[in-house]
Structure formats: C-alpha cells, structure tokens
Length: 381
Image (cartoon, rainbow, N blue to C red; front, side, top):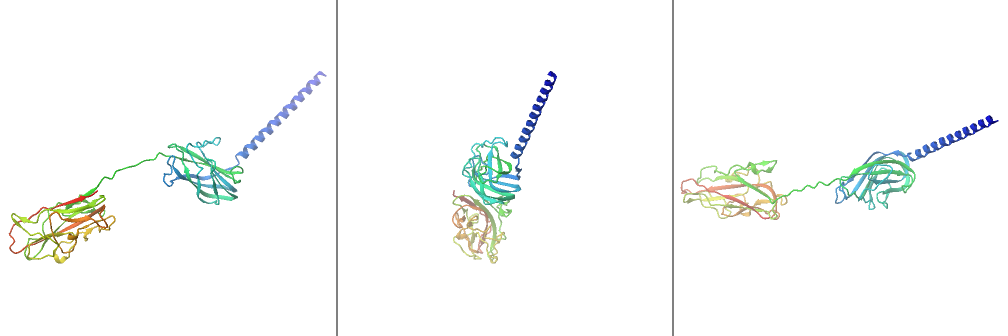
C-alpha cells in the first residue's frame, strides 16, 4: 500500500509539471503574438529630410527659422489619416528626447505632393503631425514643414521618426514607419572689404582682356605725329586712357600742360571748340571719333568711348567742349571727361581715345615742337 501511494504522488507531480510546461508554452506564444503586433508596420523607403533656407536663415543654421522638406515612399497601400514627424536626439526607438531649442509649434504645411489634402497640427512641440480624412495612399510623397526653429546646438545631428496612421490624430492604427537624420551646422561667415577704388592709366594704346579695359596693357606715352608739320596739311596722332571708380560721385579727368613749343616758338592753342583751318596755327584735341576728311586717326575701338556709356554701369563720357566730331580745343586744366552719364556716379572701366591735331602757318619757325600733357583723374567719394 505504501508503494502504491508513492506511485500516486509521482503521477500527481508529473501532472503538475505537464500543466506548468503547457502554461509556459502559452505564455511564450502570447509574447510572440504581442511583439508581432508591435512591429507590424512596414519600413518607409527612399526617405530624406532637407533643411531649406527660411526667409532670413540658412537651412542648417542652429536656431534658424527654416523649412524642413520631407520626401519618402509609402511602401504599402493603406488608408492614411495622419502622418507624424517626431524629432529626437537619437535614432533609438525606445526613448525620444526633443533636441534642445527645437520649436515646431509654429510650423505650417508649406507644400505637399503625392498623398495630399492634409492640414497641420502643431500643438505638441517636437511631434507635429498632418491630418486628413483617412484615404488610400502609396508611392512617393513630399511634405514641407515651414517656420520650424532648428535645434540650437551647433553641428548637432538630430533624427525625425516618420509614422503613418489610419487614425486622424496619430494615435492608433500605425501602418508604416521610418527615420531620417539631419544636422545643424556652424555658419561659415565669409567677409571681405572693397576699398575705395580708382583705376586710371594713360598710354599710346590700352588693350582689353576679355573685352574689359586692361591697364596692364598700356603702352608708353611717347606719341609722335603722323607726318611733318605743314601749312598744307593737318598732322594728327592719338593717345588713350582708361578709368573706373566706385566713388559715389564719380570722377573727372582734366588735361594739364602747355601747347607745343620749340624753344621760344609756340603753336597757338585753340581756345574754344573750332574746326580745322589749314595754314593757320592750331593745336587742339578732342575725345571722339572724327571723320576721315580731317585725316585724324580714328578711334581704334571704333567708338567715341568704349564700351559705350549706358548711364548705369558705364558712365564715362567726353566733356561737352571735347565731344563734337571735328571740333578741337585745348586749355590747361580743362575737364575733358567725367562719369556724368545719367548723373555723376561710380562706373566700370572705359577707354577714351584722345585725338590731337596740329596746323601751322607758312612762317612757323623750324624746330622740334614738344609738350608734356598730364591727365589727372580725380574721384569724389
């Protein structure tokens, strides 16, 4: 009898063990089913976050009020009633800490493509969401969330968890998820100083580089007339000068010097704009392209001043007394050109060609006649 009772005890213990094992199996199975529900959502693909410049701030500026452009592809056809954007300091799915300084409570929906018809709900900082009546959606979509204040920490990477829901308030019915990353960046401040500027040069000729007058190409200023002086013909020659300035009131160019002389003998200067008179004493100049009938060398650039003044970026032009074809004069200290086109002001570089003429009477004393002319360009800042 004792042995029989012992066997009954063993059978009871075995039954309890079997029941305990069954209970553990059921518990494990229930846990698996629960976790499967938690990870049911599919992964959103082709996802990105671009930090777009706002009205005044660069896209990645720490603390900048900017726009956040989200782009992604919905992997499955599902009814979507809301899309949430949850900002976190890490990519961890367990805990979400809102980045320091981030402000999303003023966010607005700037634009949307793909699945549309959403409005913005921004009441919870760091977790704004879009809402609409639930409708089927799939494929590529974009949403720009405007006037978001970036995290204030410089060079900080932050993460945004994107989740779609069948509910309209981003609380139930999670369908698809995915995370994106972005970073603030220390602004690179580049500065430089444009000083007061005047570029001025003279020479027999001045060339251009890429169609822009280039003073480095100026040739020496030793100018010779094209022929011996004669009471029956006009001797001519030319020189050039180039000028530009950023002076607020532009520049004036004056000619300074004396008429041609040989010892005590001189050639009369023309004191007012005058046409050529062969056989009389005349020394004068102008800053325009003259006609070929005067035998004056034409402007090599084919223009009175080149490039042609437009009153905006190019303002240099000949002074009135020196701006008429085939009329010449010379007076020490005269203004011969200035940046007055459209109002005195700054101008890009232009080349002036100065034409010189000499006529002499038959009794002009023989000799080598010379003069040194100095052109002075004075800007007013």
